[in-house]
Image (cartoon, rainbow, N blue to C red; front, side, top):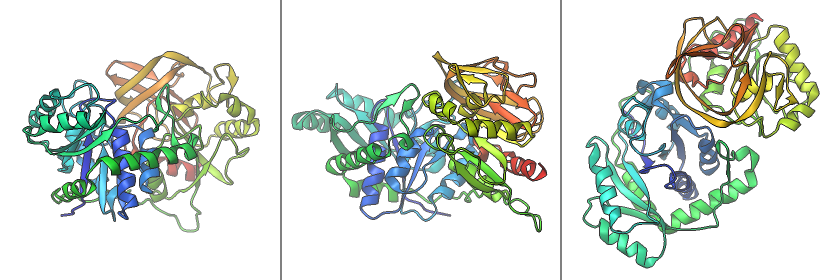
Length: 451
C-alpha cells in the first residue's frame, strides 16, 4: 500500500479555468518547498509542459483509453515517486469521457481509479446563487466521486464573493478558494490550443508565476494540502518500463528523437521505455541542427507544429537530406502526426523531407478524437494484426491519406485506412501512448540493432 497525497482539479466544463488553477497550485505548492508531481487526465501534450514548468518535474498523462484503466494507478505511482503531493488536472467537464463509452477516460473515472478527492473549479463570472445548484448537482451525480471542495474562479468583487459563499453555505461542499478575474495572465492559443512552453519559455515562466500568485492570494493552501493528504493509500504496484536485453560488446543504439519548438508533443514515458529497451536516446532540433546525432540508428519524430515553422524546416536542407538518406537506407523511422507532415514531399507548398509520396496542407477542419486501429503491415512499432488505441488531433490533411501499404486500419469510430509503411518507415496521424502498447519501444530498439 502506497500513500501519495493527491488532488484532482476538475470543472463542470472546458473553459472554467482548470489549467490556470491547477498550474498555479502546482507552482504555489512548489514555492512552499513541497516536491510536486504534476499530472494531466487525457491525451493532451501542451498542458503537461506548463505543469512541468510549474512543478520542476516532468508532466505526465493519465489516459484510461490510451493506456487502459488498469495502468492508471501504476503510472501515477511511477510519476509521483518521491513527491510530497500530486496535483492532477482533469480534462473537459468532470464526467466527460470517451464518446459513447460512458465514464471511460473521464476525469471522474481517473479520480475513482486514484481514489482521489476532487476540487471543482467553477467559472462564477455570470452567476451568484445558481452556483449552489451547479455544485450540488456535480457533487451528488456519482456517489463514488468525492467532490470535496470548490474553487470559485473569475469572481468579480468582494460582494460577488460574499453572495457565492452564502449560496454555497448549504451545499455541503466547502469553498477552498475564490480567485478574482484578472487580465494580466495571458497564455495565448492558436489552432490546436495553448502555445507550447518550448515556443515561449520566458513568457510562460511569467504566466506561471502570476497564476501561482493568484492561487496563493485566493485559495486556502493549507486546506487544499490537508485534503490531498486525506486520500487513502493505493494498492497498485508502480509501473516500470520493461528492461530490454543488452547484448555483450554491443553499444546501445542511438535513437534520435526530434524536439525543439516544432516537435513538442511526446509522452515522458516514451523516452523511459526506449532507454529501458536498451537505446541511447539523443534529442535533436530540426529547426537548428543540420545533421542527425552521431551514429543514429533509428529516428522518432513525434507531434507538434511543423505548419508554424514550415519556412525554417524547409531552410534546413542539410537535415532534410540526412533524414531522407537514413530512411532510404532502411533505418527504422517512427513518425506521428507532425512527423508524418515533415516526411512528406511538401507542407503548404514548402519542401519537406521527401521520404513519403504525399503532400500535406492546412485544413479548416479539426480532426479530433479517440481511435481504435489495427496494424495492417509489419513495421518498426507493431506486427501486422496488432490492435491499438490512439487519438488524432490535427488541422492538416495529406494527399493521399494512405500509402500502398497503409499504417493502420481504423476500426472505430469509422472504418478507413491511413498512414504509410514504407521500408523501415512507419508514419501516421495516430498518436499512441507506448505504455499502452507494451512492445512498441522494444520493437523499435530491436529494429535499430538489426539495422
